[in-house]
Image: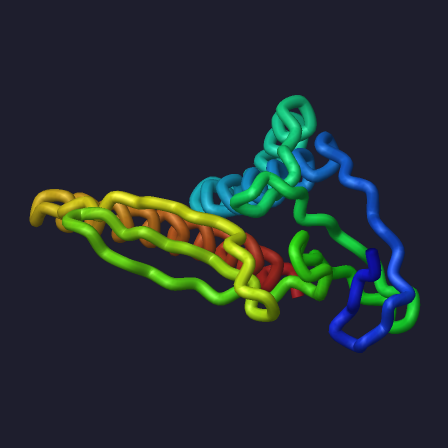
Length: 169
């Protein structure tokens, strides 16, 4: 089986999948984002703490390798010619580029993803479209405003602390 990089090279090396490493990476990224959002309102330590907690939890749980609709693993390779890492379609073994197609049935959105090269069915997902009420919109606005106010207060407090140093000039 030959694997093809976008650059056209077949000189590629399989990167072994590490369930714990991938879980830690994705958990750490998610934790850093959530911690960062909390950190903007409460201080910069939130992003660091969120990343550490997320990475630890992700490493414990791990993350399963992605597969196509037929259950074949979507492998990651490194091209030895151009140095890029890329995923490969399990059907045609070319660098995986996808296209998506959405259909709607009632209150559901159905998304199917295919390989652009060979049209292999990669994934299928169904999501419910939830109706948002006026009260939910208003609550979201209030929450966003309160969060924005907390961030502004935090920034102003930081700026005020810099102003205190100006008195010593």
